[in-house]
Amino acid sequence: MLFTALLFGGLWPSLADAHTGANWFDDQAAMNSSGSPSIRINLSEQKAYFYKGGRLVGVSLVSSGKQGFRTSPGKFRVLAKRPNHRSSIYGSFVDRNTGRVVKADVDTRKHRRPPGTYYRGAKMNHYIRFNGGIGLHASGHVPRYPASHGCVRMPPHMARKFFQYSRVGMPVTVTY
Image (tube, rainbow, N blue to C red; front, side, top):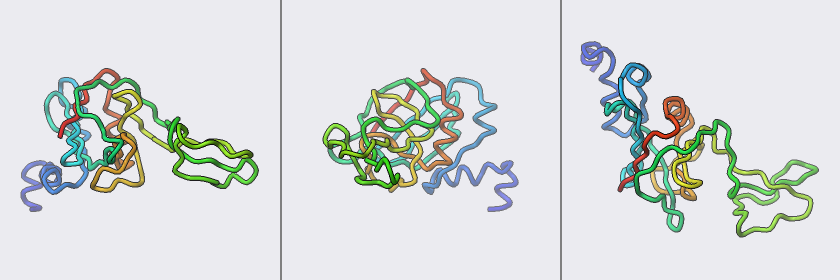
């Protein structure tokens, strides 16, 4: 394996990772490949693929929308990018005096804010919005099955890479 990695300029481990399910991103290929970037999300595989000019330059494990909150398949475009976004719908009610969470896993459309609290939206760092309020973003919890409220969760280090190389207006395709 080491010989093969040296023979192919160190790219072999990245190609191997793509087939074993591990996360990887080739910065050199992303910077040096000509053509436009695009993202493809496969809901059946729970993986996101980053392409530059048709060349695969990164793969990330993801967790998409759970039952009742399914991530919609379709062809979209990146609408916005926000490095430090917070959800306007999902989060926690926090005590104004102590800063302690009074109620977690809040849906602002269903839950009323208790007196003496404020709403703190869930962190969605490296947010790449592509369909209404749905987007890719960093999460510390990325199981290998659909578990989100519709967004596509990614490990933080992969969300940073996808965010770094994505552009507003680029295509995002979501399939099964």
